[in-house]
Image (cartoon, rainbow, N blue to C red):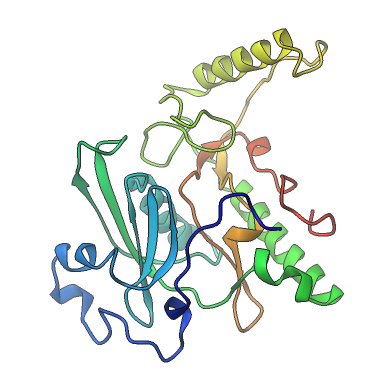
Length: 258
């Protein structure tokens, strides 16, 4: 289940008895600059491309980078207020203008540190009953997300360009409403037909509803905690999309998980 691009992970970032830069610090007593200053010096939980996740304290992590947008924190706050889905709680989020970044800002989210094992590293070590339980927990989270109907417009919570596997590396949109979004998707389908990457008889899409979609439910984003509870991480691409945009059978999934 290893990917072509593997993030750097500092082993010290998961140490139960480790020392971290904001241990015993009251988060409410410090400015935004304090966590931002240690993004690249604190032990890295994940470091790849435009995204770094660092261990701030025994209970907190910091996600930062040019691809960290306000919509991710907004989604996590909505998850916490409207669902029982296990996802990190947001304690602080902010943007700093940075014209060298593609989206024009450097984003930061201070959130819960989730102790556990990513499924892409532990799946083969699980027993059959554990695998079944994990799969059921994941399915239950997706079901709960799809019950959250959103008014739109399509895309990230709070607005902005659409990101994820169905869009370009440079994002797409923003879209004013579901009809505009539908036309964009159908234009992409037409292109696929012309270059023979899709059957000619596939009908155009007709979208009727928007629900909360994560867009990247994959083993690397699912963490199994010590109590065997599954947590869903990395909500960067989440937003209001048609239900079919949530797929749990993409590359990297073991057959029995799907």
